[in-house]
Length: 528
Image (tube, rainbow, N blue to C red; front, side):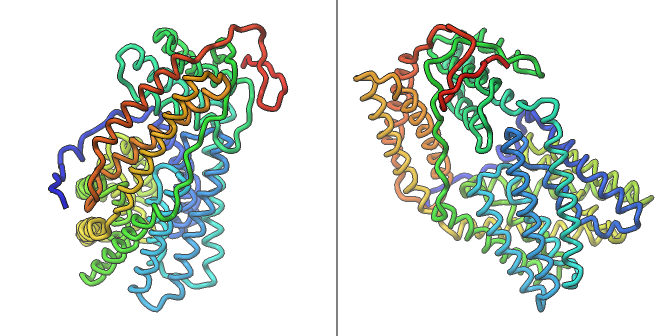
């Protein structure tokens, strides 16, 4: 293993806030408040864990178009309910806590693998694992399971409605935001020669062409803006003006109709063999963390299990960063919980309101840095444990600190023990893909084929984006084969030169009429 530095300050550095931080923050509050307040009025706040399972689904899919969001959220609700069902049945039937820990570790590994394979996006598997792991240690009988699952499904249906509701007022909001970001990135590239323009353009294309979305005049107008942003002669000031015009619900700016709007290549599905190392790390780390917590006499070993499950990122270096962030955030979070305890013990209403405030704060801050969001996540999780009955905060805080340290140590140890040598192999595969895509594009440039060049150019851009992500992952992994640094540099330079040449060859046809022909040969008005 080569010598590697494990940074501390870099892991804690704050970033700018997310452009839509308020959307998941408000959504989770609106999703959780009615069920929790209803249970409080009925005197059954002890059932809040099951409704929270559904309410927390409101954290997902806020970057996706509403047609795609509907499908993803439905899948998240069903996945959350399935994990909860396994946990509740295990709680009712398992002979002891050791079996429950092992079931929790396998569940966590499964949830991590599914979330990575489906690219569900943040917050990934952590929320699902938190709910299922907590449910494992809630006393349960088989007869109670259907009703508890019904509560989760009902709350999940409400969360689905909350997340879909903004689409009534701004049906193309996610697409407009993505295209505006791509226009700004393209303007930066034109002005300064540096910006992640290709990545931003690729993201915007993926959002516009999300599964389940259908062509319509507004989406075509947005595609035309992306095509104009991809041209070499695009005016940065015009790009920024178009980006500003996409705010709100006003009409999408009209541009010249391009020669064609080709299908944009989609990322390839991640094979399970690529996910096997991270699944193994998750299973091993969660099992070690939970069993270590049990051996220390901790009453809630699922806290250690969830801590371990939350650490695993694309490589060991990023996992180390997340470990630092998790420990710092949890330690500060228990201090926040201690400060809130006098208030939350006044009345159950203040307990529920503080929990809702922490859920809002977590989503508002987590985009700045994971540790900052965890400062609010930790007291929220501790407050949920008091929904059944108020507890002495001293032992609760002590156990949470101990579980955090045990989970972080066991989780990171598993990341180091389980090697991922396939990461280096994927770099060679990605390099070959870039070289092949570049050679194909160069052949089209030498023998112009107007209809084939756009697709080749976008395939090359996708290959370059995948190569950079693959290389970053491999360089942060330990116990690797020799890294092809020189070949990587040459391939990226050549690929970007070819991509620039392909962009310069792009033409835009003059606007002859107010309609464009879609892929099926029909004609529709391009005005929004």
